[in-house]
Each structure stands twice: as structure tokens, then as C-alpha cells.
Amino acid sequence: MLALHVYSGMNDSLGQRTCYNNLSKIYRSQHNYSQAKWFILQSNTISRLKHDVPNIIASLIELSAIKSDIKDYTLAMGDLNEALKIAVKNKDPRNESAVQDMAKRNYFSHTSKDGRSMEDRIVSAGYKFKGFKSFAIGENIAQGQQSIAEVMDGWFKSEGHCKNLMNPDFKEIGVAEYKSYWVQDFGSRTSFSAEQQKLIKSG
Image (cartoon, rainbow, N blue to C red):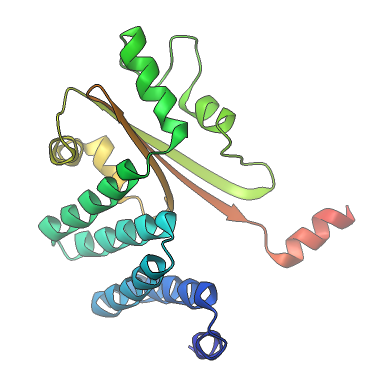
């Protein structure tokens, strides 16, 4: 809490948001869901004021996960729907090529016709893992749905897709839609600590 007061006094919105995110995780791990929701909502508010789309989406996903913990699935789905709408409105070019490729070459798969895997596509589009301690990625695809509500309903009813949506480790998201093909990519990267970075540089 001390760090939060320091960042507030310095008017450091990034520091405040990081503190809010961390406090939300702590309270969620302690099953204090009301406090966890309060802190992640503060993070979401700061992100909206800063027009920080990736963090607006990330905080909505985290809020949805908290609501799922208390079995408030209807409201959880509402948060994910909002996250998806924002992501589609700010389409990620990393996914744009994937949906267009499926539509133009008439296939439906996580692996493209030229043999590239989901990871290959994400890396070639600029989502790098080098220099990070660890990373995780995931992908949902769908075909035929005509609306965000319809595609989200389908993903929620599918165990594997729902796991991606509810995975608290995923902090970044990219979404695109083209001619009723949908792609939703998830990612998370963990940086080395300052001490670990020093050790790496020193060899």
C-alpha cells in the first residue's frame, strides 16, 4: 500500500495502475473478491483515462476472471464481450492476416496452409519472446458466427476455448474478424528481475 501512496503523490498513473493490478491479484489469491474487484476497477479506470487500449482489455479480462471465481458468469461474460468489442474495434494486424488467409484459401485451422503454426505467425508479426523469462500464448478461432455475442457464446460453451478466455496468466489480446472468420490470440510475457538482468549482462 505504501508504494501506491507514493505513486499517487507523484501522480504516476503507470505506477498506480501496476499497484492496483498487483493488489487485485493478492486479494484474489486470498479469496477476498470484493477487494480484488475494487482494485482492478481502479486499474481499468486509469487505463480508460489514458486511452490505453491493451490495458483496458487486460483489466476487463481480469475482472471477468474474478467474477467467474464467484460464479457470476453472466456478468463475467459481459466483461469479456466488452473486451472483445474493444479489441475488434482496434483490430490487431497480427490477427488480420490469419483470418484473411483462412477466408481467401478456404480452410479453418490453427496451422496455416503453408505450415506455419500459431506461434510462428505470432512471432513473425512482431510478438517477440526473446529477452523474457517466460511466455505463454493461446488462440481461439471460429467460423460462421455473425456477431460478437454469437462467437463469444460459442467459445464459452467450448471447454478449451473457455479455458483460454478465463486463463488469468494471459495479459495481452489481439482479435480480428473477416468474412465470418474470427481469430483471438492471447499472450503473456514475464520479464527477468533487475537482479537477474544484471547477472545475464555480466555473463
